[in-house]
Image (tube, rainbow, N blue to C red; front, side, top):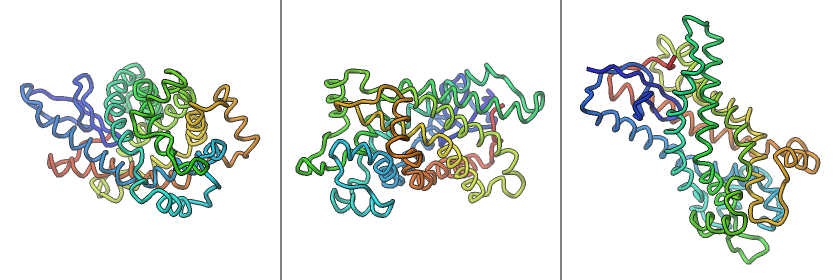
Length: 337
């Protein structure tokens, strides 16, 4: 029998060094039979896909509100949205209810390699920091979780950024107000084709640097806080409590989302300029122009919808915890160090 050390976050589970996705804790497994591990990995992926698909409408609303000023400049929106409800109403009325899921396919596809890469790199970075709670204390252990999670997220972003770009362009591809209700893109492949034709590879990676900064903040908090706080807070009667696990997951996604939101706005506004005549010179230039012309509040447009969207991330974490109990009859210890 082989004992394998496992880690968890964001709906996926990983076994360091094995290329297997699983959950935090230690579980006996036959070295000749990995079927259970791949089944668990599949369940984690399905849970994430279902959760993201369920939250896709609010995700698109968030992106539309966040990037509406760029869309106004490009003539793809006739007037600003008055809020979440107004954006929902107008989008459903102008494009149909199913349009609220526009861009979701790219988002789901992106999710699988993103999480797999996060876990692969996270284990490597965690070994670099090597902090242990018992030896170095809680503060250093938590800092190590934050650093390893952030570094893993930033590294994996390099491989999946173009899918995030495509998802953003599709979600913000409202029927043009000035072009007879036509869309700019016909689908995922069309986004790649047109962007490569107009801007080359650079067009697919526009906004990459603020994305790296944002992913360090967001992914670091997402991985680190959940791994670090869960074994401290979810103890005793709360250890296997669904609502408590859900609340913790929601708080983690909300805190991480708000902390990194201005960087997220800057990067997506930069994405929106691929294929356009006028582009921002850099992420600093983008932030400076947005603040000068629209005010600091513009960096947080769509933040309310983003908080609601965090329910999806919380659902992935808490539902998966419960699946572990149902599948294996016990709860595995949080954290990986």
